[in-house]
Length: 96
Image (cartoon, rainbow, N blue to C red):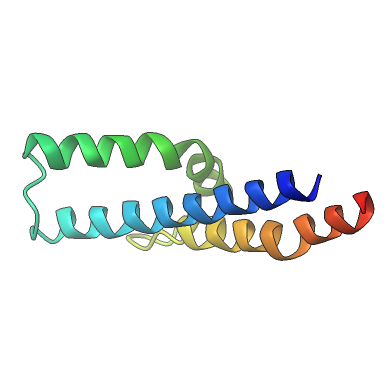
């Protein structure tokens, strides 16, 4: 069971990297450093958006409107870290 929990922790860490990549790519497109009309960039952005939006969307609906500042990725990353550092070790102790 601990191997499965370790694998889940690894998947959560990879998802954190996907969140960060999506945020950085959206900034690069917003500031005009990368052409958003490029087919490769557009497909990469759509893939990252499709991977992160199912969890970021509900968080955005709950958080208050802060104008141009979107803190939902930060909230999601903190939630993922909480699961990694608190939930998974306690589950490992419970099943040990």
